[in-house]
Length: 439
Image 1 (tube, rainbow, N blue to C red):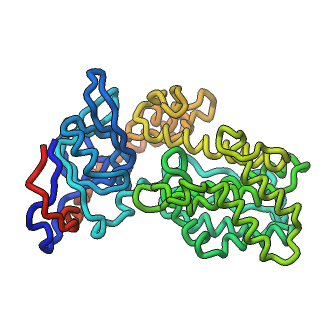
Image 2 (spheres, rainbow, N blue to C red):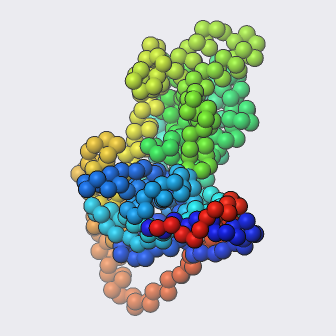
Image 3 (cartoon, rainbow, N blue to C red):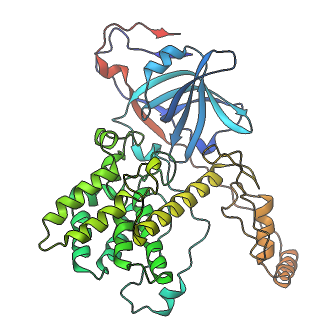
């Protein structure tokens, strides 16, 4: 494998070059590849023979694909990092029933001319619109009423933040409500919340994912309060909002969702506890015990000491916030695994959970799969469609189609793949020591 390095005249101004983008979702087996991706994960491994190779993921807005570098591993490992943009040359293969890119040549690119949104995986599309709970439909006048959840998808972060603010505004306790808005009105928190990911890779790992997760946990908090009136609704809602809020400073929304220095050294749990103390001290008459209960919910929401919680849950509200946070993150993770998997009924073994996940239609009259099939013409998708359509209507439509003359199908619109301008990273270094190419 070749790794491009700076040429002797690399300090000269470089004009932008252009290359056609090939998106992940359009990749096919046994095809040559020459396009730009962002690096997701990167790790060095040893094969059975003992020879090293680099395993990485390549990302764009349509998804991610596994990739491997088998040659010139030492030079390649030093040439790029997670979050970098690469001009990749290679080819695609199928390995263990999954598409994989084998990289023959790579070049690190200057990110300035590139649009990060084109290389950030978008949120997965929903399989169905969630139904409003009975408590909301039956009592629209209650101040605890929660709005209908917006559809999931990239660019929805600002909409989720708007709904988070609406729920926070209906908190009954004035001290709790004031503290929540002290966080939301802080420009260093409220603005980045619109684009921040909730994690680097496990769940809601996309721009706006943190706001979506927080909004979802707040909605679940209301449902828990409906079912368990022994728990305090305001504490549940506040804990749902605050538990992950400072992930906006723990994980960068740019550059492959890298952890910040503060995130690595301190972590969002401790950062949030510090912020609660700071903001509560500025609110006149804020009760000390209320501050302690809210802080306890935050520092115990991982549930166990070995999972990173300084304390285990010791209040009813803390235990419930831990549980609903776990439910929402786990469900999101399972659905994302299902959506990325190309099989019909069972996923490949999910390494995160060390098991295969059922993704086929449920064996009830509902007959619907948890996620829609990835490909048109999916066998189970057709079964679902016919189950939901009455037989009589299907027969009538069939007769109408036989009687009407068949119209020629319109020619499909061919959307030309965009071209991206870029600068080789070597052009920015001014390094005079480079030769031509290594490898």
